[in-house]
Image (cartoon, rainbow, N blue to C red; front, top):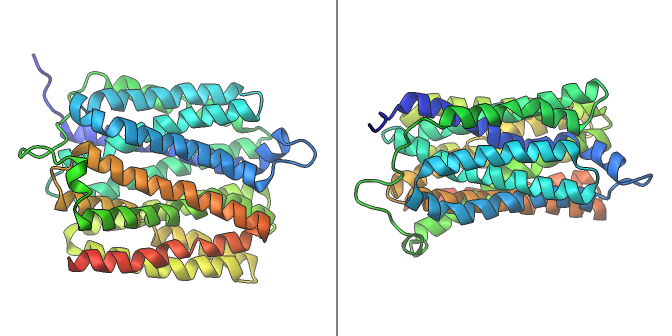
Length: 385
C-alpha cells in the first residue's frame, strides 16, 4: 500500500532540513579567526587561505546542485533529501577529527556537497506542496535557513565562550541531520513538476526572462553571503570587538534575516514581490556602505546587521517569482537558480578576502554593495516583462 502524502508534516521537516543546510554554510565563519591561529602557526592563515575554505565549501555546494538537480526530476526527491542529510552528518563527524588544513578543506567540500543536495531539493518540494502560495512558502522555508544559521552560530559562540573550538561545535550539531534522516525515511514525497510535464533546462535558458532571473539571483546570493561570511572577522579585526561579539553579531544578522523572510511570508500576495526586492536592494546598498565607513564601531556593526533584514527577501522571492512563471521547471530549474545564487556566495566572499589582503576588510565590505546595486535594475526589468 502506497503511503499517503502528508503535506504539512513534510513541509515542517523541510523547514528542519533547511536548518541543516544552514550548518553547511554558517559553521565556518564563526571559527575563521580560531582556524587561522590553530592551523596557520605563528603567522596564522592568510585572509586568502581563509576565503579559500569558504570557496571550497561553496564549490561543493554548487557542484551538488548542478549534478543532482536533473537526477531528482528523474528519480524523485526522496532519495536526495536522504542523501543530503546523510552527507551533512558524515562531514560533521569528519570535521570534528580533521587534523590539518588539507583534511579540513576536504571535509568542508563534502559538507558543502551535502548542503547543496538539500539546497537543490527542498525548494521544489515545498513549492510542489504549496502551489497556491509559493512566495509565502519560499520565504517561510528560507526563514528557517536563518533559524538554522542562528542555531549554528549560537552553538559556535557558546563553544568559544567555554574555551572550545570547531570540533566540539560539530559534535553538538550532529544530531540534527541524523534525526532528519530518520524522520524522512518513511514518508512519501510529491512529484516536482506541474501536470503539463517538465520544461527542460535547454528550453529555459532560451527564455530571456529566465536568464535575467539567473543573473539576479547570482547577485542576491552575493549580497547575502558576502557579508555573512566575513561579518565575525570584520567585527573582530576591523571594529575591534572580541571573538564572541563577532559570533553574536552573525547570530543577530541571521535573526534579522529570519524576521525579514517571515514578514514577507506573512504578507503573502498582499505585497508585490518585485517591489519588495527593489526596496531590499536599495536599502542594502546604503547599509553596506554605512557598515564599511561609519567611524563609530557600534553604528557600523548595527548597519551590517540591519543589512541582513533588508537583503533577506532577495533569494527566496526570486525563487518564488520564477517558479510562478515556470511551474513546470522542476528540480532542474530550482537547481540552476540555486547554483547561480550560491555561485554569488563563492565569488563575493573570495573577492572580499582578496580586497582585504590588498587594502583592508572595510573596503572588502564596501565592494559588496555592488551586488544589490546591480540587482536593482534587473528586478525592475523583470517586473515589467
